[in-house]
Amino acid sequence: MMKLKTEYEQLLAVILEDLRVCLQYTPCRENDLLCFMEQYIKAPTELRQTLLPIIRACMDGKEYPNPYVLYQHYGDQEINLLEQLLRGYLQDMQSCSDKEFVLMNLIAAINDLQDKCCGQLIDNWRKDHLTQLLILAAKEQHLSFAISIIDSENRW
Image (cartoon, rainbow, N blue to C red; front, side, top):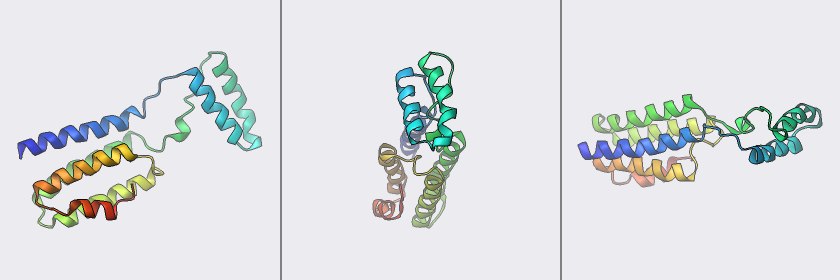
């Protein structure tokens, strides 16, 4: 049990760290300029004028806003909610007699969170790690068909 908890906590920490790293922004003028230019090209004509001073500031090395903020569909609140769900899952798998129900409820909650985040919270790398995490706890509780439940129920 202690080994499971340690392994589970380590895998959970890796997933959460990856999610949080994506929220950290480090300015890079060249990449930022490309991002602003893409926004300019895709923007409706009436909004383009508001982007020009930002593009100019980026070109001139002056202060400018994070160009990627438009693409961030999740934040600390969503990461914290996912963490709560996953910590609760381990406890629920140990205490609840209907393990399949616990797993299906968790997947439904993660699906809802993924939808709320426009499909950006769980990417392919995180999906693989999240699946490992869910299976780890399920195997400990002898839920041998967990992978088929995960594969059939998840939308991430």
